[in-house]
Image (cartoon, rainbow, N blue to C red; front, side, top):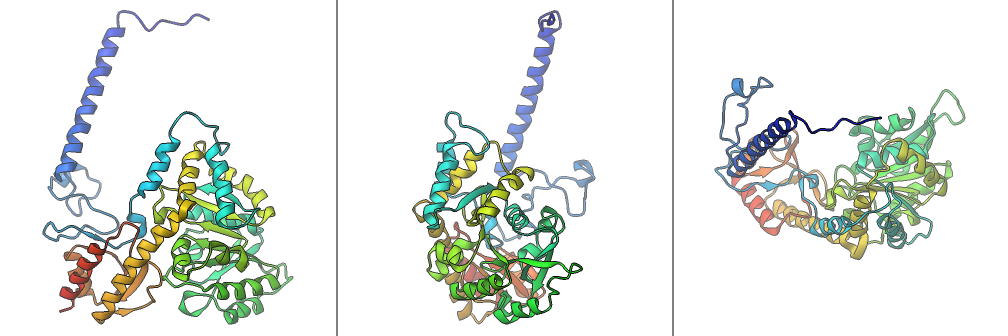
Length: 419
């Protein structure tokens, strides 16, 4: 077959047009970047909707941030207390990504970084049979782990406020072919042996009209910032074992819990009766890198296929694995978590001295406080970024990037707003 040459009378014109297009686009991008840097990029006026810039008009206000508009605070630097998800990537993890960005490597997890991560996980968790599966989000980690642990006709028991039940859009049910999530009551946003026993008593065991509990899932720490002690985990997992259940731990902030309790990773996981852990990293300094750590061979074998089928066996897995390996090496994950926990202790001590009411103990890096809406508005105007949970309650979260100066400024804003 003959191929037509691209040379000819129109080739030069085509190349000239492309060059003009490229230079035009480059010019627009450069102007846009300069405008961003100077804070002058046009944004729509409130209520402009999707009518476009002509209808919206022009404004010199900076772009909106997050779920709330940036407070108008006279140019004062904002104090970020909305979420640990808002932080950047830890320098050590960025360095690991750069180091992995050399040469070529086998795709889909066949690379040296993923092999090294496997050994690092086994060392850190002190379990020779542990297997790790990098994924890109915590929701994926939870949904895929639970789908491999529970049959479609089964049920996962979790606290009634658990993230998998309330904040993941039924991802576990979807990935698990329709498996059921059942909420279990419990004070302090944690399941207790008595409430778990009640859930077991309410189950029609062996009745094929009723979803059979097959997995118990913990959130550690909970979505309200409370934590299970290691002995509490052990008591609940023993009860679950007595009914033939496997046990899962949603560890989006597990490093914060380990630091708060001063225990070893193995003590909070497989030694406490946990079969599979959703290992969080993104909230604590990683870049869209999470993992499933399995101590159950049958679950691990199934995850080989479930992760691929769900699109989480990424072609350039080495960049996830390099991050996770750096994260777990030399206790980086625990040092980052210790930093965010320390900043929350500083904040909690200061707010307690100001007489602010708490809805939870500041054991980790999350605190729910009671302030009336006028105080919340004054805090926003002072530059604090946080989430209003409901009237009279706001959530404050510190991250690995939060500094002592940030907390000092936040406490000064609270003191002024409470006058």
